[in-house]
Amino acid sequence: MSSVLRITTPGDREIAMSRVFDAPRRLVYEAYTTPELLKRWLGVFNGWTLDVCDIDLRVGGAYRYEWNRGGKNMGLSGSYLEIVPDARVVATEVFDDPWYEGKGLSTVTFDEVAGQTTMTMTLRYDSKEVRDAVLQSPMEKGVAASFEKLEELVVARV
Image 1 (cartoon, rainbow, N blue to C red):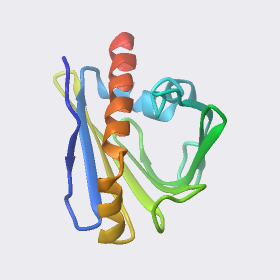
Image 2 (spheres, rainbow, N blue to C red):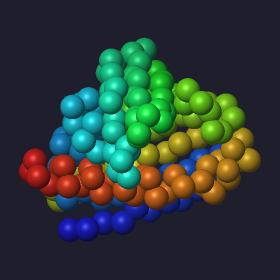
Image 3 (cartoon, one colour):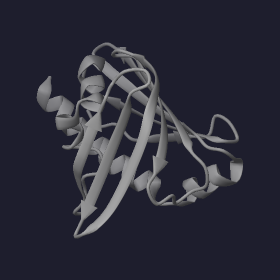
């Protein structure tokens, strides 16, 4: 089953991105929280690789991602504020070279119905202007490409 990325703006500072995956939520959650699996789908397209993926998956723990493409690097860090296994992860996000002002707050939920999982990632920014700038960026294409890779990964593991 192929699903499309759905993007909405539930609040004036928020972007919600959701997609249905043809796999149980346990597998989708595992792919979102396990470094070896994240390296296979998160931002790895158009020559980008996720070379550093460190996760301390606990409230107060931190994560660190570093992508590389031909010597160009992009880093992202944050800390976990809430973790409900197989259901919800809330974390901060800050890019090394910020391409938007302030910090982001990411809330990711995993909801399963009949063996399919809807993963919804809601990002909250410091202002409406920042949210609007992110919406105008190539973010949608990148998320859609990553979620395609995630679908391939979880379907192969069912």
